[in-house]
Image (cartoon, rainbow, N blue to C red; front, side):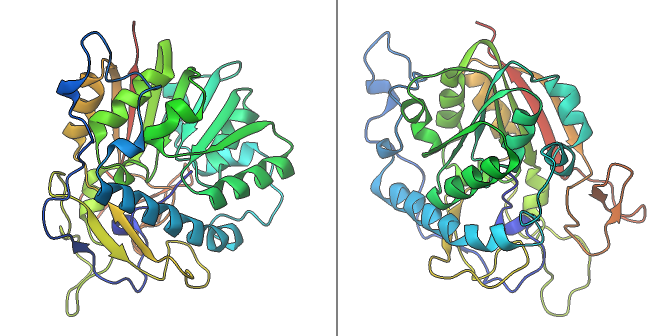
Length: 333
């Protein structure tokens, strides 16, 4: 499910992000070097969000509360259009680039897991194409909304509430043919090495991971100019990670609708493309394909133009830059 980062959201009245004082890098209760010999750090049954230090666990809880608060605004928004009864096949075209299905292939008959699924519209697209589908999300409100949407769509989808780092336990040690994630997912993960290990543990031998994520360059370009500045694309945020969590506090989300009530604070972590690839290969996965695309499923900037696919890109007068990437990785053993 598309869940935009604050840095990639359409223009709204946002408070400027604040980088926390101090490193606030994710630390676990025990270093990996202390693990008993012969036991894999990528065993999903052993992974746990509770292994992060107290500060990061508090950030997880803040993000959970923030997405619980955002969910009713998103459910009622025109941006998602959930009030209308949709043919489930609609979601396959609305939120998926054509090349995603080319890379993934026919999912019919596969066991598919969608991590950080939010309202589950993309999860439904896999079920509509014949996959046995499970969605996992941190927000209980999002999971409830996703279940309601699946019921209204007449599709059998299982939704589980849980932190990605707890996915192995939350899903009872099950393994899948395909794990799908992205479009505003990785920025909520403080440790990509650990995430990649979780994913590797969730895949069967021969299983595949597909990440369709906002490009780090998009996240580095701020959504609104400062006073007195023009519409030029300017770097306003980090492209690379490593400088800790970014604290955000905003009453507006990326959709239309009323202000978010209650929990308005959240935390994000930036990750460069090299960090993503290195994490996956370090977990034993083989990167089979990487695409960079100049299109987005919504007009991020007002001067974007619609393409033949129904998505949006910058006009010909603007630089051609990557805004989204698609990455296919496999577990060969």
